[in-house]
Image (tube, rainbow, N blue to C red; front, side):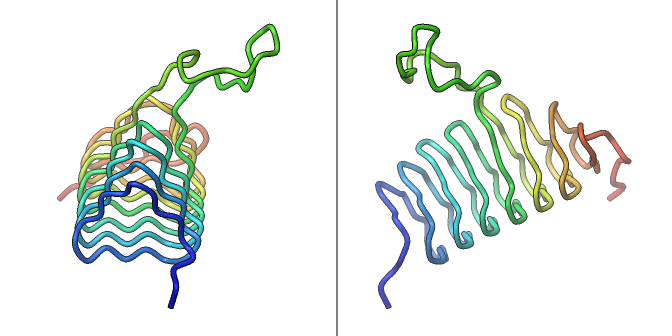
Length: 158
């Protein structure tokens, strides 16, 4: 069966599963990772091994996902705190006219469905983000955060 996904300049690891209607370009996807339908992965994104990216999620330039991460349905990452289409004079903004802020998601993080992740933050190893949360600042390792804005609920005891 012919794929209905658009994969351009994608570095794929072994045993990667990509469902239909994925748009990915200039990114890396690690061994054993699964990418659900209707996901977009932009240039420069790096996804580790054995991750699960659920349908309808958006991973923009500047996002780095470590090994064993779960991303629920409809998770939106952002990479610019002050996005604009045009400059003050009405001309279209170019890549040189905005600031890319990187986001790092460390190992074994779980991000619930419907979350929005603001740019320039780190989500610590083993953290859990509750569904529908808006993450506006760094999340400590082994913690549970939820809400809008996401707040610490508790630390996970291993």
